Amino acid sequence: MPFTRCGGGTVANGGDYARASNPWITASPDGTLNQLALAFSGALFSPGSTSAVVAARSTDGGVSWGPTKILMRDVDTFFNDKGAITADPVTPHYVYAVWDRLDNVRGPSVFTRSHDDGQNWETARAIYDPGINNQTISNAIVVQPNGTLINFFVEIHSAANGSFTAFLAVIRSTDNGATWSAPSQVANLFSVGTRDPDTATLVRDSSLIPEITVAPGGMLYVAWQDARFSNGARDGIALTHSADGGLTWSAPLQINSVTGVPAFSPSVHVRADGTIGVSYYDFRDNTASTATLLTDHWLARSLNGASWTETQIAGPFDLDFAPFTTSPAPGGYFLGDYQALLSVGNVFVPMFMQTSNDLGNRTDVYVAPAVSATVAVAAKAYGAGAASASAVTPELQQRVSEHLARALRERLPSRTP
Image (cartoon, rainbow, N blue to C red; front, side):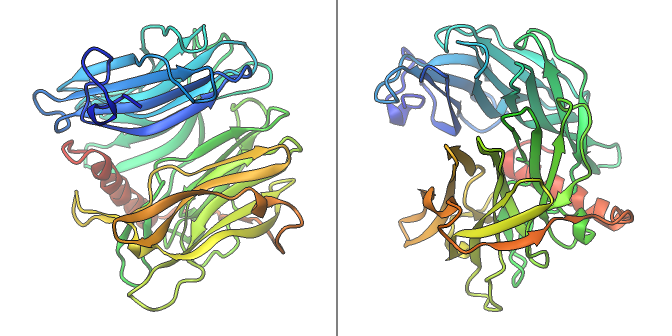
């Protein structure tokens, strides 16, 4: 894509940027594709730096793409982060884009929409402001069958004493994004992040990138990393649901089957037949050797959110062969911020990353549709678990605060949380 100079971008075609990241793609009911990315040049928040949200559309299945559209472009004191794009499956030709726009004191949710399948876009605007010293991150929109838009995000608060707290929330729109409701809280975010159990080396995971999906009947499901089930010892995979359009949410359940090891980077999706799917990584096959970090990718399935079956998608592979981020110190193993889970008919299609054995190309991207077929692989059956009433302790809150500060530095090293 000509979103950057190395992809053929220039001043004339709107792609005069050094780097692009966070790609996201969506398909309209008529097959039109719209792609979104974040593009930037220079050191973040430094004089002369630029940060933009760019998009392009394709009407031939991605063989060719139209001109780059700049949805927002900022310099110096702003940074646009964690964009997502959604084609409306209910109202023809509408496409929605959302992201967070950071300055040195706040990070509101910013939104724009197209009425014509991405040919033209409205002027981007803030649709939710969390206030001074707070920010949103990982905004993403899903559309319910009745046409209601649900914008889901993480909200992070910074206290005067330097501590951090976070929670998951949604805002709603019943007029295709023209107006938005006040936020409804989904759950507190109690992630402590992932580490190698043997060496304590950090893993750059998806702890700030929870996922939301909408079932064919309109039920909403959210999956994320959370340590409430172990009082902060390790992250598990939490799942909650809403039957009233996001106004109220069920108590979170732990849905990873092996609860004594860290589990991370979940994706959630509901098939056409109503089956819930959650994919994630964990360390159940790891050994005591400090030379390797054996990691598996799993697919858990359920019809009711309480009883689950689970099959292995991939692994074990050696996570400590992944690229290692070094800024900010101490760095960590990095497979990538995003995985995905979708379906074709009644077959789940996980998309995921794992390490290779090539020093010049340490990770590859895979899809695994066959593994999710009901009769393809023997499945393990188990039940979801609930957190105890006394799970939230000062020790857990302290670990969560430290992890939030570290995760924010990972994404914006030049911005002091």
